[in-house]
Length: 109
Figure 1 (spheres, rainbow, N blue to C red):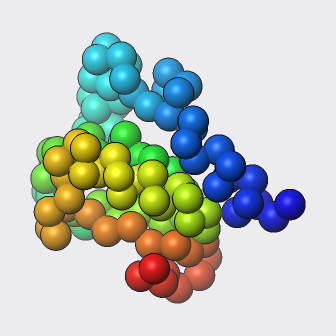
Figure 2: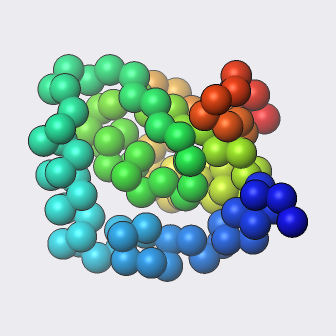
């Protein structure tokens, strides 16, 4: 089994963990405060790797950051795109998701 195959198998349930899905408003707010305390105030493009379904990305997008996510597992990107639509953060200035490893050039798959 390849790493991508393993993570593809985890995609549908990955956000079930408390710190993965950020479904609890208190946990989500704690992550939002932590991220914003360490990021520049200027809203600029913000790259992330291991896109996974990506709730932290949606927190940043909601604050005006243009977030780019990379993941080498296609199912994780598919989940991330679906969750972006559900979180209503799919605007073109908001984020992009690519199938790629952090060390490779992204593919717009």
